[in-house]
Length: 378
Image: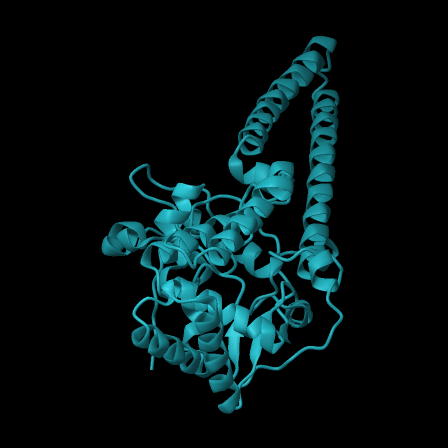
């Protein structure tokens, strides 16, 4: 059975949520970079081999075409997150098979990770190219002078012409190189790379090492409280955890109480607490636990008090259509502030991100009144 899902491609900017982007790992390297419209006219986009290779490498496309996810971008995203095909163990196998074909072993790097291996390989290739250029220029001058001596036509003027000709050729090549480097350096892609905004893990080193408490292994009957993957372009995947069996039981209990009480948000606090306790006890009777996803991605069991607070907030959201839409929009903004291209900005870290979290908490805390009344009270 083949299951295929589609989501729109996210905007091309430097954020950390561009992990695999739904890229298939089974296609050939020269089939990357293409879009659905390209496949509609495959006879003109995929058949010419040189055009196919240039687009898959992200080097050239027609003005009427759009960029897909090219092979270098896909490989960088997979390397940065150690996805299938680019784990450290697969690097060892890759090097045992000889590494890059047609590239001498002396020009291939060392290291225990793909980042170290590729970076050292690039540096070695750069040094090799530099030496080739120096030896070529020196050899060209020696051959010219040697030829003049053999032909007995050596003259200072002829030597100067040779040097000038070589200097002009070198100047043209250098100008093309400087222009190309300057063009790339001014691109958004290069800016994101220089500032560590693209092809990086969404978790900082501090986040990955800050939690040292007990962990829990999720089971089918547990309720999983996810804290990630809120984004506009993920559509149904924003609620991917809802298909977990324990979450399905929890959602059924929530929907049942909403249908019994016409408007949960208008009940007295004692009723709201009683409904939350009933739902939490129903999960426990089903041998389930409430597990919270720590920012390090670990699952942590939370207390009954916290479970009732999560349940109360979820009931509040589900019982108020306006509030549900507002909370969804806040989740998108919070996710953009945490993972988006402005996540490293001082204002985002010190002001915007805490403000959005406080606003969400405020809406869910005071939601016992109609949202319109709360807005009027300011």
